[in-house]
Image 1 (cartoon, rainbow, N blue to C red):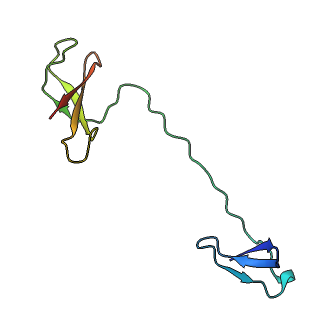
Image 2: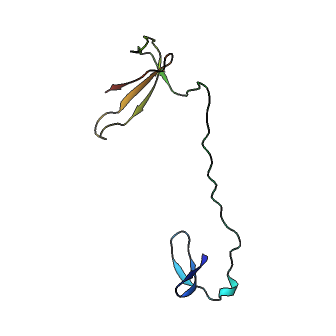
Image 3: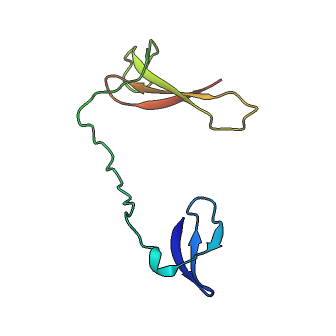
Length: 98
């Protein structure tokens, strides 16, 4: 419960559910410790380190026979997922509809 000024005077409010109750003695309530929100910066990964599975498929861009692959639900939930490929050599990206 945190002290808060309201139209009735000082009240105690729950930070989680919002429940409010009257403060008995206003001079007894004070903020002892505040909470700071620290946002972490996203990690930047440099280089060509890709943690995706590979498959033996022919790249339509360069003819290489190895590509990374991943799947995404691009259409309705009642339809199959779409498989995406990225060529290991040239980086060309294409998709395969199931």
